[in-house]
Image (tube, rainbow, N blue to C red; front, side):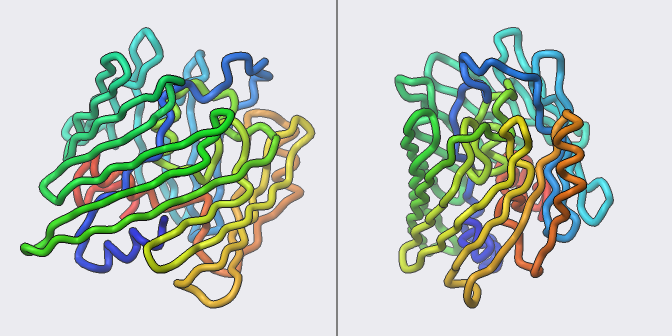
Length: 299
């Protein structure tokens, strides 16, 4: 759904809406048989984008640092309560750029620096519905799953700008491989990670196809992986066709872990690019509604 939001930014940030596809459970499976493998870095072929991850002793992410063209662009720190729930998210150590999260039964409420939102869990403990209301309008996202993998996400948006109402709808469907995802052993709640990666990176298995249906257009992505000896993906090559570009385009991302086998595999698998934006590494505009317009992680 990336192209839709690029268009919105061009049209004077009318909607400023995209938020989350979420599953508020821990990133690892309940019987994951963890081998200690943790994702420590994502490298994209998009103008030097790189994310690095730091963890606590319970395999929860405590800090993500964002790089652009080799330089630190920004960072976020995460705090948890004794039950493992994410309770706050702060950008660049600034108390004025902090969001808090409160869980009450099957509802999680976000009090952001800009907008507020409500997450509603289904009977399986996965996110069933997300609602955000602001001065701009309302956004509702619904989610469907199979074997805890997100298989369908539908966004309905209604916004007002200069007295004019805009409505739109977008649906994404996903299929998966049978391998472990980069976040398989991570214990950070999934909803936060989907803030960053919007379903492009799986949390149990890895997406093989993503079809995004807009009101008048369709974008299709086919993702091919290489894996290390432990079955984790180390490279992802995305081939996609889009109404916003000519022909088939290709982008690549690389995953680095805290294991030597993965690091050696990375050295043997250099990334090449034709200059097309990476689908796995997006621009993190989902932070817009937390930290406010103009203060998102990447503009």
